[in-house]
Every structure is written in structure tokens, then in C-alpha cells.
Image 1 (cartoon, rainbow, N blue to C red):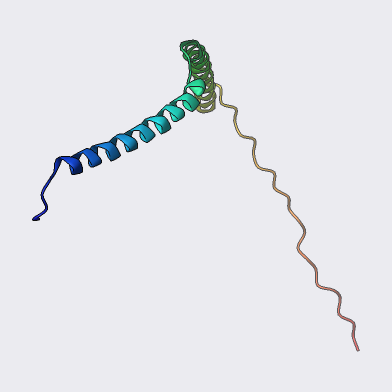
Image 2 (image 1 turned 45 degrees about the vertical axis):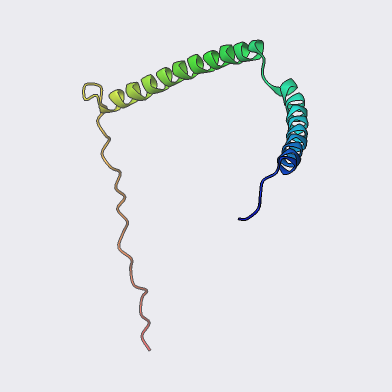
Length: 105
């Protein structure tokens, strides 16, 4: 801690900071130049917005019809006024199995 700060040491530090800052600015500018062409323009965002609105409307319509048909199907199933009586079960009676005849010795 007995180190004295001189004007020359401050100038050296400032020059090294300036060199690093210049290199950083060059790298940052190169990154921006490479990134800017790939960003969306206002026209791209507007076109995407229109497409999203069409998809959302189509999804809402499809859900409306799907849920409507499901509710209609369920209401028809449980409607007692139009219920068909279940036919009686078909029962088949089979004759009892007979033991084979025993031969006398």
C-alpha cells in the first residue's frame, strides 16, 4: 500500500482502458452488423399479426363446433323421451351333457 500514484501510471492505465474499449466497440459493432439483417421489420410483424388473428379465429370456431357437437351428442344420449327400449337378452339353452354309455364286461 505504500505505492504512490503518479501521473505516468494513470496515463498508462487510461491508455490500456482505451485500447480495450476500442476492441470492445469493434466486436459489438460487428455483432450488430451481423444481427440487424435478421431482425423482423414492421411489415413482417404486421403480416405475422394478421396470420395469428386468422389462426385464433379458426381455433375459436373449431372449438365452438366441437363443443357444440359434444353437448348435442350427450343431450341426445340422456334424453329419455327418445330413448329406445333395450331388446330383451337372447338366451340359448343347451342340453345337458350326457355321459357316454358304460359297456358291461
